[in-house]
Image (cartoon, rainbow, N blue to C red):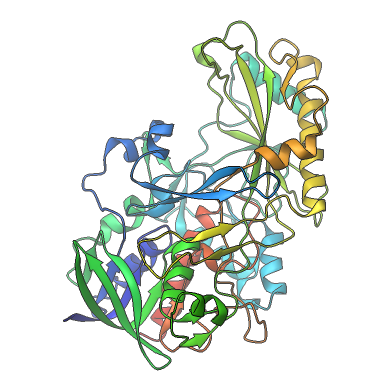
Length: 504
């Protein structure tokens, strides 16, 4: 049985999808349906809404989907994460508001997408934000829906270990960078966050709430899309399940915004993707697109852990800043976040002081793949992180930087001997055995021209070879941005809405 007809169907209410649905429904004559696989709780539970609840409780809740992923070296498992709630990653992430660097967007242009230059994207990044610290800067916006604030500026008083950490970084020659969202950030940077009055400003809060009352916007949660409804090579709707019942929604334009794992899965289950992969599960090939699920990239994280002081105090809470440095980069652009972490304590063990290194680029590529033809089953992930020798070299150099940093005289009082990696342990091997994900997976529906055999969408986010079908989320990034990816995904959602408005 077919449900109502819509002008636009948005499949996935994540960081990009909520934006696209809200923007496209601004026209009262455009009928929009937003489908989300996770719940749409109203009001938001405190676990999600309260910005201080960034704890393991949230990450281990039903609002987060965990994808077991194996490291290549020893087959050990880490978990890639994705939000499974309205707002997607923006409802469960650490609330950083970091823009892509100019170099990132230069790379997108070099991949055959001239409409995605820094100059073309800047107006959309400004349109998104209401920047509380730099409202009059030509780089920033002050009237957008997303509240942006740096809770810690570099000239503010700080707890003794934090001040010592900052002073040690300055002593090693790193400059102050009061605005991390400049085109080429570098040094000791104040980090912007989307937190207002202690509350998370997800895309649900910033975009969707103001759109909920519109008669032309329908929102359906707990809706698992099984397949696209196709007529030849034209998208006409979606088949989805809710409460055990199947439904069909018909639409003039179908927008996939299901994220780096969900968007390629829907395409492949619908017969759009690498022919060999589809045939493996008996899925009829409607349109062969070899790049679906390929080009996967993420940011690996490695922790250096030191013995801490005998006592720590409540005011040692680490404020929101990070070091942005260059270590064996692909280009001259900064390629690492170095994050001071609060002291940790486990019963019976010494107090520990961790510092983390986050590699913001990936030279090789992984993939996301079907494990069955069942839409309820997870896709598999082969991240290939730290498998390229130059990436591994970069990570080891960043670890060496951390070790040099904590041995500066300013930090002697707070950081003791190195606990992990252990004495005599090979740091490269340690990195390959213990890295985790920064949870910034991108690239599995790569944007690029039709001449690129791995491209899935063109630079206006239309799927190559299929009419009326679009993808607009983190999966379209040709190259992972050297920043937390949520704001880039929001920008993609803004641009997706802009492109679709021209035809629907």
